[in-house]
Image (cartoon, rainbow, N blue to C red; front, side, top):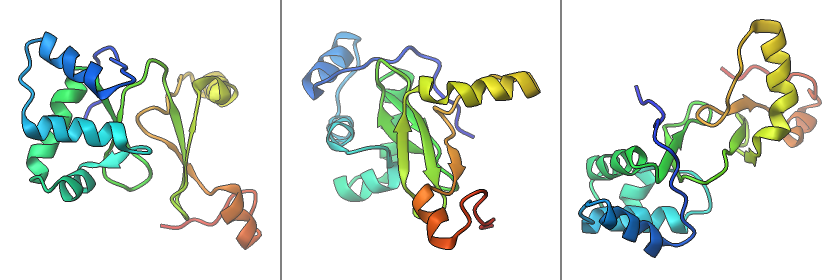
Length: 158
């Protein structure tokens, strides 16, 4: 089971700055590590280790080792969308939370303040303060629910 990193996020706008930070911390920058980090900077959103391995022509176990190290250092975070494997994204200075449509696989990234009313309701009713940075809120998006006429709940797809 994967565990979210407890290290403070290290957010960088440029690949070169992230590389410099890793080197300054005494970490060797292997070719595989540089490729993985570069691919994360180039990605439009969260990506799987398998996807990185295929696109970079790297052994998947090497990709996982590098992602784990980068996550431990605070440069990368992983998250889970529905039943998909863990996905990886560059850490940012601000938390990002996710909504995931289990029908069309649409991912919507939102700032935590937009989910605060839901968080407050869950806290009042159950005594928990949820976070959706590691596990997304899974459901049916408006487009998919509208296509089937089931706007309130959406069908159970398991």
